[in-house]
Length: 310
Image (cartoon, rainbow, N blue to C red; front, side, top):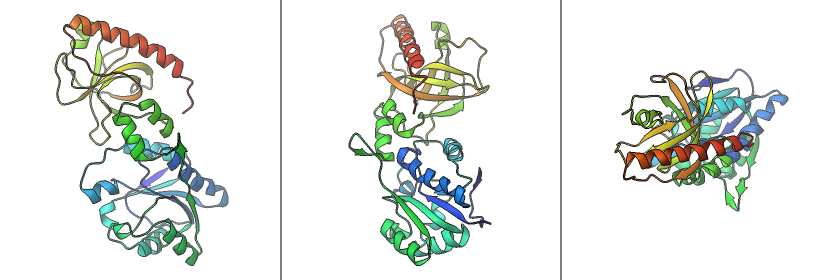
């Protein structure tokens, strides 16, 4: 898949999926897959999105992302998108809804079919909605599919819903709605080496400030090392109240990893299940006992969840 940060004129007719697609949850995937399906009809599957959250730009407040940019591009490619445009929202936020369709989607991207969610908004001050897009497409002989909402347990699946689940520690539910596992990839840094003294050596990583912050506590995780090997992990996210630690960090013990130190390497950590809240223990002996117990629980869950179909 090719990814662009500017509007490079397309050389062939396209089918364009429209949206920010934070997290690429099951509702987003319905839009993406519908556009990708048009390849069999001779159209190039394209995703038009932004490098930053429009909500964040408009409100001026940070909106924690559900998925890293690298993960988003990887999954878009896996779903069949061939060209992704990640445009600076600030550069086009003043464009009218009509100009957005005529100048960008038709003029630059050669869109012949458009795909969007039921709540899609576009143009200056979000002045265009799905109904207006229907009108514009009819006038310009452009096909349009407005994908209805996906619901789960009586609730509309949305990025806001998933963000709340992650912040509440309900990563199992979030992962099911995402059809992927929430997490991040970051460099392994030197820590205080307390885990090594306890017999539970950890990898220490900075949290990705662009992502939504998960509930502080201990999780079952899956860790993928730079060489592609996967291990069960016990991941603590927070401030480590027993020994102290600020700002919040991600610290992971891999019970079955016995290889060399990973300092300076990239490690991918995916959260699978919330085990417990952070606790303050009266002694390091009590802390070690709990960590070992969490390791047993994590290994049992990890083995049972390997066949899970997200």
